[in-house]
Image 1: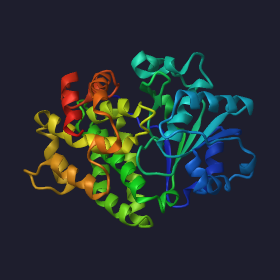
Image 2: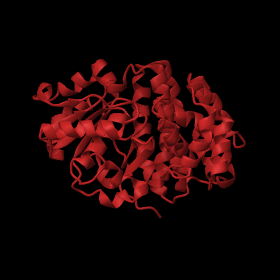
Image 3: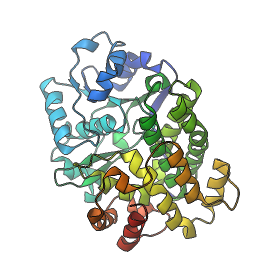
Image 4: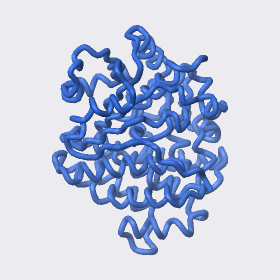
Length: 376
């Protein structure tokens, strides 16, 4: 049995961001560093959030978060945090700003380089309760990092590695669906498929955590219905709210572990020159992983089919091939410009990823390569 703990406080409501000042007080943050990205600022979302703080215009802002947060960006944000004598962080955006904020929260309060705290290096036990408090405000419905205990960072050497600790869970999550209204269709689809992949991988993972499994299947049921609607109409308020719930639930289920989809998408996302979107990668890798895992999922796949509304004998992988395509997303790695010659390297890296060990079926390097080649 996995340890089961859901310890953060979540505001889920249209207009919830108006309570930011109250949440800062509750989290013990007086001088926050704002972590966001250029797109969030350009869309006017940063200004909308900071308008709810009397000192909003005077707060230091780091908006240089890359689409896949990097070690260098974390160091630059840390320098700004220290220069302004900050005592906490507010992350505004998608998974990248939220993950970057978590990395800064650790670096600001612990000695040693960031790599010291990577999960595969035994870093989980080195991250303590001294971690700076964070408030997370998602502007997409995908990663669920606002309630997650992990952060994925691309290091200088090209590795994309995870920090993992209950101390990384933001003290407050403000899930305001209004901040996702009008999100472009392609980004809505890609982030939504990220949430769906979380729900499926957590539900089918090899770990035993019935609470996380129940949350994951509920998130999947919501997302399958809501995502096509949100893609078709960016101002479908009900669909936007459902997707925010689904994304949050996918991450609440992380305690059950992920699997091969993420073991493959993490190293693929580490190729900085390719600038690959994590959600798109998950969408592409989901069908071959579903096919590979089928022999180990005799109990879970029927439940997935029921949640999706499929016939008992339906092909899950074929369904998601069509579903992804219907959302306007690519279904092949080659369509994203991934060179075929890097696939063996990615397959090898997948066996070292922290999500590899909880895949529903044990996978070898050769298995991973076969899955990659299937969708190249």
